[in-house]
Length: 323
Image: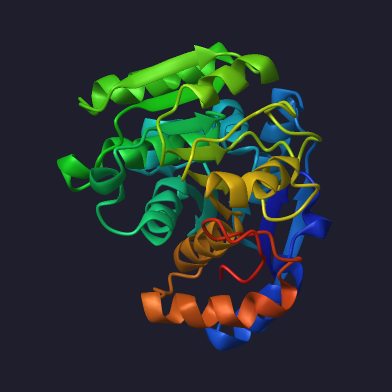
């Protein structure tokens, strides 16, 4: 068997384990390809990440990999092992997709592609022009940074948020976001807060105007327990609340769901982000383009493995499918 690898924290719990064989058949990929997980704990030392990349490079059966959670750490520890890195990988300082071709290791940052597709799917056209809202992104790791990049570079200048507010407990991540803002010569105001304090994050939340977008990109609720917000957090009226997690305790998501009716919130989980993320990596590793129509078919194919629903539409307080 040839190996398509999933590098994460607890890969055995991911829905992709059940979904990939169905997708492999639907896309008519070779059936001698297996999906294998590689688990690395959060905060592992750099040599652990480098060893994983060295092992994959030396493995003759290795085709490629999707990386979640550890994208920035793998770039920092092993970027010199790659023969080529794409523009987004160098710009964002992360690697989320690996592939081996002609014995050479290639790397891409697919989060900007995933984030762009997800934001279009989540917001629709001209959301910020019509709402006048800000964005609060909790977490500036790989996914958070990619979402911020997409918000800075939206096609319509009139459809940018009033402000992008970013909070992360790691100052170096915020420095990287500021560098992106400068290099892109972005015009949207950027405000960074070096904090992971729930009380301070509650204050940032309270300062948002109505119909803002609030994003949990911290990993809390899946890779780490808890929520970045305290129990006293109050979401802006009419906000879109987006948790990038789709499985786990989902504490942040449940906080928002509890306020969905009274605050007229639209609450979304990370299932669509999961779909867009995996399909973008499969496209690259297997060099097989996937159309928008095919992505919707694959999303339908994946519904059987979707964890119990975690999405609430504006103000109805009920559950239903978002995929």
